[in-house]
Amino acid sequence: MNNPARRARENAISFEVKKDGLQQRQSGDWVLRLTVQAVDMDQRITTAGMGTRFMCVLVEVNDDETPRDHNAEDRDKWRALGPARQSGIRCKDPVFWAFLREQGMHNVLWDVIDETSAADAVRTICNVLSRSDLDKAGFADARILWFDVDQKFQAWKLHENA
Image (cartoon, rainbow, N blue to C red):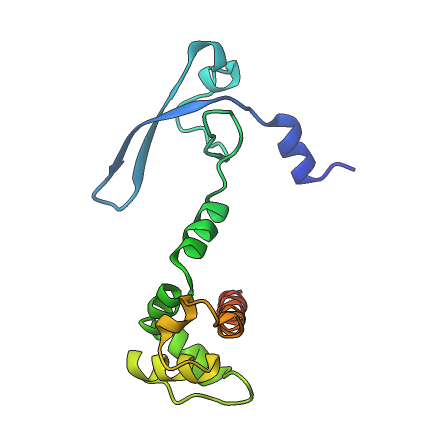
């Protein structure tokens, strides 16, 4: 079968580059300057005429040559914050307020209009007097409830942006 994806894979030019410069023009377009080692330069690029268009895919690599996983790094940073700080961040987010108003939790649509009402909703949902309780020993059930709220919020955001 001769489909565009297969043709792209068969004709791909793969080489390592290093970011050497970045500039934004008055038009809003960007100029990205990359350095390619001489041994990696492909003749198809050097012989192509000026203005030749290429499809480009870049993957950042770690020192051990493995692809860098930004999503996993972001998840790890989020987890390291702990549930009390996570809930504090979420309660400042108007998108989180919309989620609580539109989707609710535990069959309740929350009348969330600001950070204070979002914090009230989170405390009620998690059955705590203070969001700081989410980080304390003895509040495992509250943490589970918080993680459920946050997971549902993230799923809702993905669905809304789809």
